[in-house]
Image (tube, rainbow, N blue to C red; front, side):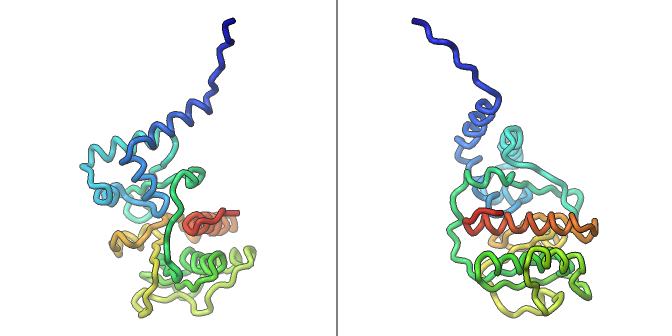
Length: 226
């Protein structure tokens, strides 16, 4: 007796294409790295030791199946960052990190890095610092209000220059494209390319930045973002 043909829907086809894309070891290594940190193609090129044309091919495959996205830097417009789509963080291994203390860096140290430090402490119970490459005179009121809505406590030190911090931390993360490009940090530093809420200066922009940072931290430490 002949069996009826089973219809394969588009979702199953796309999932199969994603698994096929990850079946290539270099592409899987790229996705694993992007689960930790956004990276410019030139940074990925050094990490996976590939020529630029071959790396571009692998990135095209990953983007075509929706695993990654590429966006222009908010600092140097000639530069792009590669980002793992958050829905696929579960495809990557848990971050086996022994990091306890953390330092978050942005340009003005008035919003993103302040929120990141507060979130790190709230989610991990461990200390965190924040600093800027060109600190503002005060924490931005929009960041203060967003923290209050999320029941977070911001540091009472105000914006500080990175050079003022003598303490070392286990983990350093730039959360601003401009700061990342100005500092040209070692590969051991992570980069989370978070849009600047101050540039938009709306309640939604600050809440969105806080939510994205929260997702990054909870994914990094093996939790599930709310």
